Image (cartoon, rainbow, N blue to C red; front, side, top):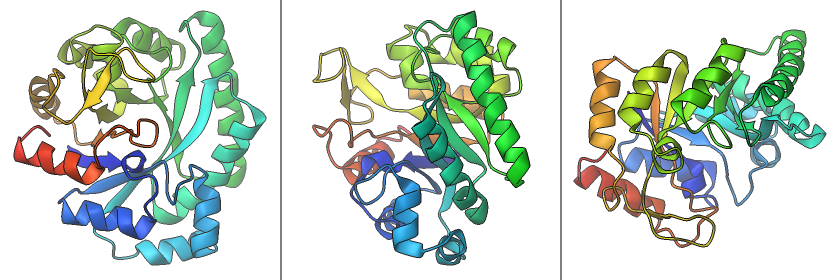
Length: 264
């Protein structure tokens, strides 16, 4: 598996600073969600590098791999602004060889009507992708309603060729499932995994509180063993959500603690 982190953990950092942190911590990849205090990555890249070719030139020879660019689009309930943001990221992803554009599942109930809505958004995306010849494709994060193996399985049955970014913490904390059991049920569609840790104490936005890796109860050891046993070679990314949860310690501390404890 490829150890990564999300730039949500250092949202005010520049791309250079984000990559330098990854190199210093021995992390092989990053997924980009926020840079320079914004989640409008296309605008950030344009201001910093001008064109996709300019960004590609900056990353040429960079040992840290950019594994994904993360958009705000929800497959169920997509807005015109979300669609425009996704379309705007695709040329940048292609220029740097990023395989995936992250989108959210959207919805609240993971039912047939929401899956029809998601399918319509996906059809729009595929038509646009084909028209432009883009190589990057979407992966869907299990974020809004796809918390359990059953919900993910029903989604995958309705849209069988959609790649899944599995938020394993949400399965455990919100879905109440053993992530190892969930992994065994959904592994065929998963290309990327998010991990983090928490305790069951309310915070400003959730009925739980994110904590340093190993300070909570997330069973990453057994999950990591299951991923390795199955030969999973995709990114396993620490999604340190400091942008949304300012109470969190710096990402550098989280990465150091995770390494010292052999958590990750």
